[in-house]
Image (cartoon, rainbow, N blue to C red):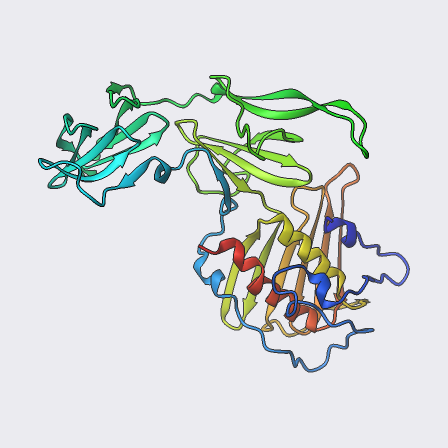
Length: 378
């Protein structure tokens, strides 16, 4: 369910914002017993006496929110291709790691070299201080960082043969957006049919994400780092959509790619003297948030906001990826500013104050603390 389905509010008539109630069990999996609102007929903005809530600890660690914070698939992970040595295989050299099943990294002081599987020296340990796989069949070799010299590169194979190669150069045209056709067999609830999907394909003919969930998209478009608010240094960025869920596919200069959860919304939270911000990056968490919002009590229109600017508050931006973005700023006394922006064909912007059950504020803070925090767990 999208937030826009419950947040398209009308200013006509008495301008009521009525949402259906639900029990604690409707609030989703994580934190359902604590992060749910108490239904009230209509809240009254009197003295603020709320149940205990606290500033979520995980927000303290987010210095600069980045939309690329939740990786879900990595096409090439260094740790999958290099293993630390626990028992020395050769008498004449001290090895620190094995690459694949054919190469060993050995150390002499601060320098590193390469041995084959028989212990023969392929590369003397007298130039490079770091050797690491950087792509399938490719090694990056780095000199002392103080020299500020560019990396060198080598190719290698399963027989332990290494060859110097030119530094890889990323070419945007090596990745293309293509349309593929798929066939669906007839089932009890669906007819047989051919249908179109969108994929990313590399110049060597490989389909990005093939044999995983992360392919056969409904929509794919290239974006920029600036447009998605990220500081992660990739060479190409794509936004993909599938079954209403959003992802980003990011390529490095070796054409390795990482798939990240997309953003569905944004949170800003002030509790006492502490303040933090983060994205909502998980589709299931976002669905749980919409259920929580549906559980809030009836609300009425107001002519003026709260006068106490020192109160704790939470601000939610929801509807990312759609034409309808809603910003909800709720203070601890129940006063709430709704800013509903429609960027579709009929562009509009509605702003108005409402008053919610004060426990709604507590429910949202606890949802951030108990549910959203798991997206940023190490």
